[in-house]
Length: 221
Ligand code: E4P
Image (cartoon, rainbow, N blue to C red; front, side, top):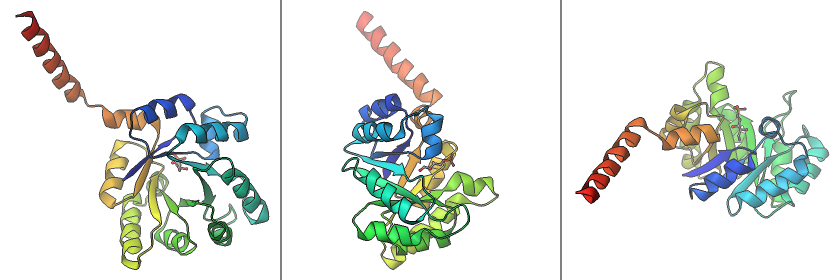
């Protein structure tokens, strides 16, 4: 299972890369805004470099059509490790599957994002997406069950032999990460604060304190 960091914060990417657990980094325009990016093109190139050899996911900012295709090609040319996030539909509900399919056929690694339903996952896989992001937190926000969408999607991909990888995205806490693992996500993308919580446990702290105190007492005796 792959772990991506959902962040555009260079210091967090360096820190978590240094922990040896990252398979890549995901961003989107909201993440860039939240992390204070002011010059996206320059920042994306730098973040892609920091994410290497992992995959760096950069999202298009055009809603569809040839402008989306041109932007995706430009972003893909930033570095060898870049995957392009393309929303499954426009804000008006028009399909972006043609763009996803064209980019995939041209050799661009596509991550179809903003997927909230099994139907969208099925269509994204048919269009050739390498990665499919299921925004589990946003499914849950609307009273749905993000983990159930992931689970059914994984069963469908395996049953029909599609090699698209499901990314559990929009995770709101450590429980979402656990549910995504159980549901069979190939990858989970996690904000830095949640990754830190995954590593921590108050009784692990207590246990390590006991070990260190015993070691110190043994040396002193
Ligand atoms: C990552 O690929 C997604 O774009 C991101 O996790 C979405 O998170 P949000 O639903 O909290 O905005």
